[in-house]
Length: 168
Image 1 (cartoon, rainbow, N blue to C red):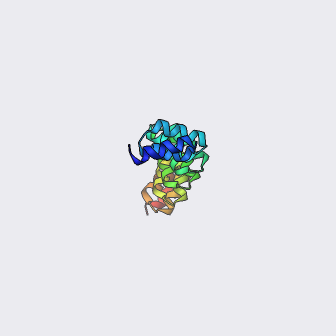
Image 2 (cartoon, rainbow, N blue to C red):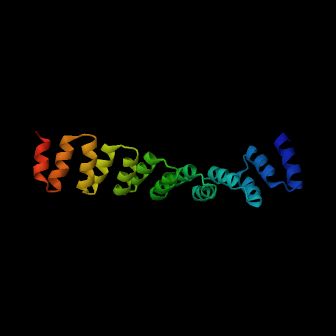
Image 3 (cartoon, rainbow, N blue to C red):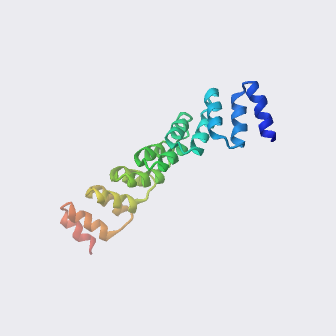
């Protein structure tokens, strides 16, 4: 019998659920470890077990209860639930990851907003172009600067005189 199994036996008798859960994790008995962590109200332990079992939605909910937004976002990415992943990345102030997830969800306006927060003007402009938001795209290309893309945006918005000046 391993040291972990011996310790587990005693922790179970003592109803020391978090400690029993840690022993069961060491023994890679994720379902039983999860039960112990649920009895203890230990969300971090539950999240780890749910992750090991591939229960990403449950893991994300547990990480959310702990305000660990980055880990919750990763769980939603594993599920390819891009909008939920993006929202959690935003809560974690991870703007680049949020923008990437918004792009996966084809939420171009939100992706552009997130790219602007980290001053990735070219990426922001590209996102705004995808939804024909020529005004915001032009603002981004003014900052980069990218005269050809700026001219294209100005032309598409009907501002031909300003577009012409980009070619000078």
